[in-house]
Image (tube, rainbow, N blue to C red):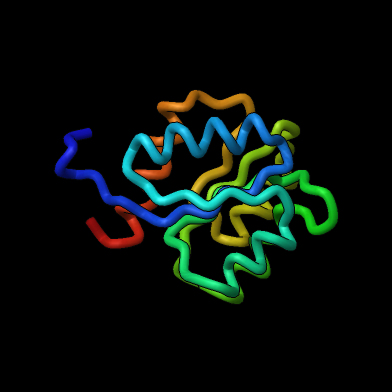
Length: 130
């Protein structure tokens, strides 16, 4: 993808796995995005209440509120925000539920870092109609 085609965004990453958060931060910041990292859905919801995000990336399996409930609540706060759901335990039921909640993409862990960057870029471009 050409550099001129890139759309920078403000991205909220929610994952209780520190190494996944750090990896996502590293590759997304390098791609020119502003990234906020949190480790629980509850903290993610607080961040969503404090400011606007262009993209939400969340793990499905989180302590407390899970990623699907987080997506439902995030949609109530910002219906146009794009979302990517990650899981290490994919099921057809989870994918169907995620699609019902309007996720842009459903990603199985482990994932390729270049793939996730491209997916984020595509989600951000679709949001601005580029």
